[in-house]
Image 1: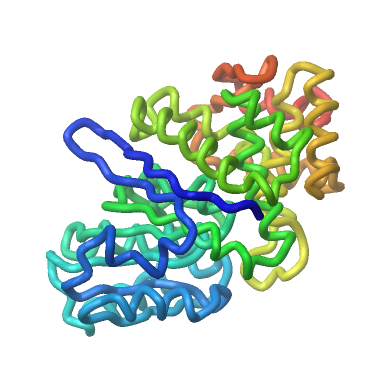
Image 2 (image 1 turned 90 degrees about the horizontal axis):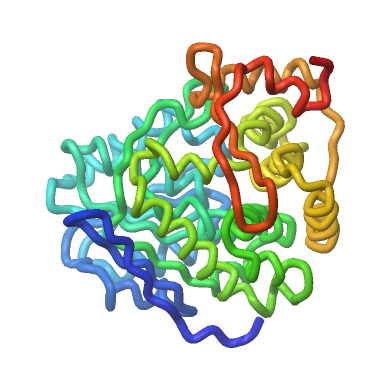
Length: 347
C-alpha cells in the first residue's frame, strides 16, 4: 500500500459536529484526538486482534475491555445486556466513554449500548474493517437485531469522534477486505464516477486511502442533509433491499459458517437496480476484478419473504433506489409485489 498521509473530515449536524480522522497509526495515537482521562469501556469482539483494543486501553486512565463473540449473532439483546452489565459493574457514569474497536457489528452494538446507558453517554468509533471504515462507522445508526430481522431495534446516536486507521487492515483476511469494498463501489455508482474509475482501472491496495476518504465524503454529505433518513439518506439503501433478503437466506450469521458476507450480498443486490445494461456490464467487470460475486443461486421465494419483513416496507409499499446511469440515482416507491421482477420472478 502506498503511504497515506492522513485526512480530517468534519461531520456537521446543525449545532453538533465531530471529526473523522483517516490516518495511518491513528489508533495508537487516539489520546491526541480524544479525552481519555475518565472511565472508558473498550468494546471489541473475539475476531478482532486483541492488540487493537489493548492499544486503546493502554492510553486510558481507567479502562476495561469488553469482548463479545465474533459475528452478527452478537447484535442481540442477550449480548447487549452483558455489555451494559459490564459497564455498570465498572462503575461507569454519565461523563464516561464507550470506544468501539472492530467491525460493523461491534460499532452497532457498542454505539447502541452508549445511546441507552444512563440515557446516553459519549461514544467513539474505531473501525478495523474495510466495511466499517467505508460505511457503518459514520452516520450514527446503531442497532441490534430482533430474531432474524436486522437492525430493527436501535437509535441514531452520533459518535463524538471516528478514528480510521488503515494499518488495522493489514490483519484482515483478503475476502473480508474485498467484502467491504462493495460499499465503496456503491458510493461510486451513486455519486462519484472517479471513485468507480479507481475500481475499473487501478490497484485498490495502492489507492485504499483514497477509496476510504472518497466513500466517507460521499456518506458524510448525505448524512449532513438527512441525518435520520427522512429522504435523501435512503440513497444509502441502494443494493440493500435485495441484499438483506439474500443475506437472511444465504448470509454467514449465527451458527451458519458458510455463505455470503454482507458486502457480497449488497453487491448482488445492486445489480438488478442498475437500469443501464452497459453500466451493469461494467459493474460485473469490477466485481470480477475485485473478487466479488456476480451471481448466486438462492430460493427466490424465501428471499422475497425476507424482503417483505424489511423495515423499509410499509403498507404494502417499499422504496427502492434505482441507478439509471453512473453517478445518479432516484428513489422509487413500488408495491412490494413489484420486487418479483427485480428478483427475476414472474410478475
